[in-house]
Amino acid sequence: MPHIFKILPIGRMLRHMLRNVAVLALPDVAVFELGVLCELFGYDRTAEGLPGYDFAVCSVDGGPVTTHAGFDVAVRHDLSRLEEADLVAIGPYGYREHEVPPEVLAALRRAHERGAWVMSVCTGAFALGAAGLLDGRRCTTHWLHTARLAERHPAARIDPDVLYVQDGKVLTSAGTAASVDAGLHLVRQEHGTTVATMLARRMVVPPHREGGQAQYIETPLQSIQCETLQPVLTLVLSSLDHPHTVETMADLAHMAPRTFARRFRNETGATPHDWLTNQRLLLARRLLEDSDLGVDAIAVRAGFGSAATLRHHFAQRLSTTPQAYRGTFRSQPV
Image (cartoon, rainbow, N blue to C red; front, side):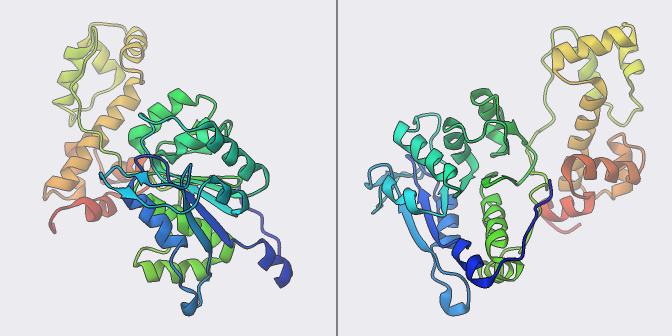
């Protein structure tokens, strides 16, 4: 849904601009992402013409917080600081080991109800989910944790393939570098493109990556563990350059195509076409990363037949191009 902006008088616009930021650190907070939030909103850059924030890192009781790296962070503010914040942000934390206290959930709900921005980075989304703020909303988290998030919060509309999602004033992001993209997106919403670009330049990061860009998900070619179809799928994996179809795979399984498609979905959770396309994309990605083959040769080797077809599937499923992917993940120049 497109965002609709209104031109406001300067005085009114300033009153509603982001001024007060509280970052909630929960037990086993991730150091990098906590640092990103501090870099985005806690560093005084007013002398450079950038906005300044009344910024605080908070914990449940105002005391030290453990980090996932094995040291503690000294914190000076407790949950009361969230009550006046224009933005409440939550970094990743040890969601498997630590339940979110009821007083935190209540504070998050109050912040949302009074119109504050609520932002999560990576597994911070589990705290928003526990507060009920993801129910019926599009959201995301790091791709490693999307299945668990969906299991815990089935009413959330989880998109595992994007860098960040804004739904109303709830902003969720994937892991690590995506926290920078989400933060700059929020700055752009509140202060405009010029300010966001200045901040990005100061942080030496790209000024804008669309939230819909795909996360780069590490999904290796996997051994197949199926009840009856394992021999067929193993054979297909070893010959992805062949022109496999539902019909040819069904012949290998000695089944009618419709019976094979139904059995395939029951045993793998995917349609034959979708599974085959994903396996071919995975092989193409490995070849882009590890070989000197050109895009045309990779398209043939992976079973796409042509570079145009390979580019189509890269754009559709990864929101990038084969060349851009190689430029990002190639360990040495081709």
